[in-house]
Amino acid sequence: MRNRPQSADPGRVAVICAVAWALPGAGHLWQGRGSKGIVFLLALPLMFMIGLGLDGELFAIDPSQPLVALAGLADLGIGVPYLLALAFGAGGGDAAAGTYEYGNTFLIVSGLLNVLVVMDAFDIAQGRK
Image (cartoon, rainbow, N blue to C red; front, side):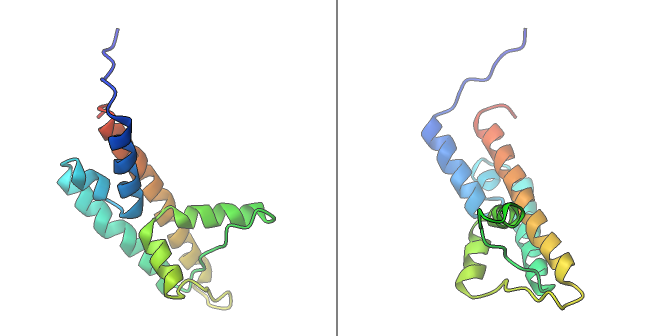
């Protein structure tokens, strides 16, 4: 029978997850996983900025259009960079641009990858890794 890890303080785990979502890599840095944290801190926001630079669109979370809403939730997964882009009016997208779909892909994938990074930080905080 496999030993189960002791469960961590739920409040601490929640804060780690919130910080990991807000700033990609911060959850790993907080938990002493410096190399992984720095890679995430550099790579994920860079992917997001490339998506904006390629005329990608930050989609609205519109329940009347389920696929658009899913894309919006995926965009939101990157955390504070998404909020900053909205605050500064970036991410309007240009559907006529040849790079529009590539930009959308970079934006969506950067958000989804950050969700995976948050789940990894959660596992570390729980003592599973």
